[in-house]
Each structure stands twice: as C-alpha cells, then as structure tokens.
Length: 133
Image (cartoon, rainbow, N blue to C red; front, side, top):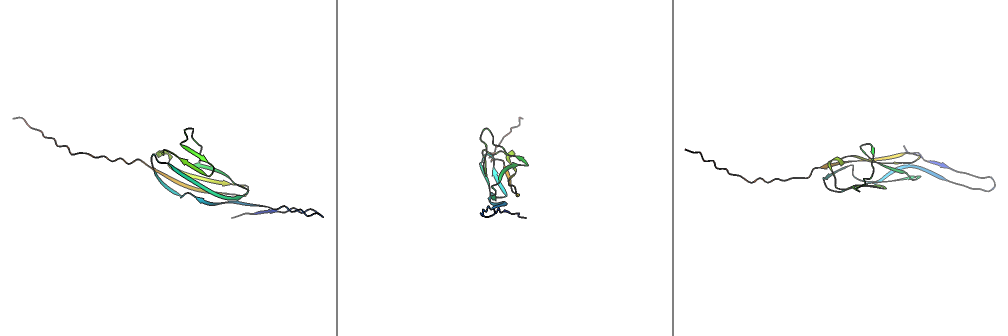
C-alpha cells in the first residue's frame, strides 16, 4: 500500500501556497537475490530506492547491522557493500532496508560462499614385495 501526503498552506489576501509530498521508498536497481561466490573472491552488492523525503538506509547480515571492518575487508558505503577476500562465514542473508516517515522497502540478497576447489593428483605407486625363501 502506498501512502502519499499533501499539505497546502493558503494565507488570506496574499496567497501563499506550499506543497509537500511524501512517498514511501520504492526499490529501483538491486543486486540479484541469490549470489554464489568462491572463497577469496570479492563481491559487490547494491540497492537503490527513491522516496520523498529521502530515505535512510540500513544494511544487515542475518538480521544484525552490517558494519565496516578495520582491515577494510568489509566496506559499507551508501547503497553499496563490498566484501573482499571472502570467507565461508561471509555467507548469509544480506538485506538493505530503506526507511522514511511514510514507510520502508527492503531487499534480501542470499550469498553462498563455496570453498576453494582443491584438485589432487595421485600418481600410481607400484610396490614390489619379495618374500624370502
């Protein structure tokens, strides 16, 4: 449901009109809802929305607010999040939530981090055992 609000101010004898419109956040371009990445990779996630007045944005991972790390591995800047040198523990549900006085809109991005692929080559080993007489 969309709620729009309109306010008009009219003064007697000298007409003064002020119009203000409020609209809830509406999602625009967003990252796919499901991402699969490899350990060690870098992933960028983003969300865009329009609203009046301008909305605030909160990023969360598995329900907890996402904060940048001191080693710059996790970067949160505006409508973008960058995770560098991915680890398996980075996998989870990331959400962006835009909120203003009229409402909110959210988008969830599920990130799966797969382990590094390890290929092993085993050479044949032939062992000869001689039995004594």
